[in-house]
Image (cartoon, rainbow, N blue to C red; front, side, top):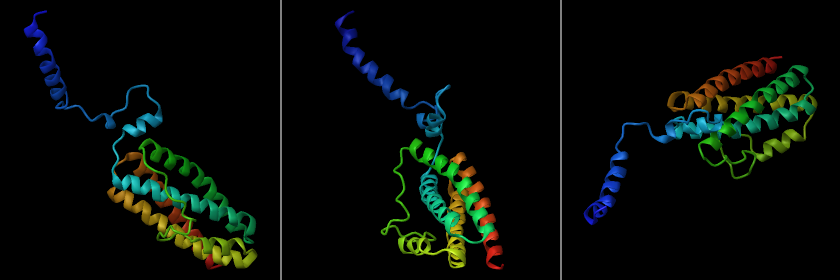
Length: 196
């Protein structure tokens, strides 16, 4: 190879790299290789800030919902309330796994524990509320639990509706729609319990 050709090779290589960046192909973050794992596929599906906010808020919200429902399993007197608590746990545990998977696939930090003192969010119960509920049982527990859980469920509906309006990721939007429906049903059930 002549010296003139050797001198041109770096320039040709640089031009090829520059032109490669101008292709019309989708960014790699939006396409998953065939045969890849579901987690790898999810990291390749488009998402935006609203999706991330939803996944982090919904995960913290669902975790607190499971904590609350677990209290009702052992402290509630009303059998319908105990059945509702079991349904919340059964619904939320797989959703917590899905939300955790989305957050991990997107490379985002896990949410703060909503039971921590420094976390102030609409609809979340603070550590004082959780401790007060943990100290109650029977009808006193039932009454306080229903009131607080309605407020917590209403916040969950608002979190899901924000994702439905602004989110981009199809899995997150699907989960938001499911969450909104299930939590609205829980609110209706809780209000029915309030009325006797």
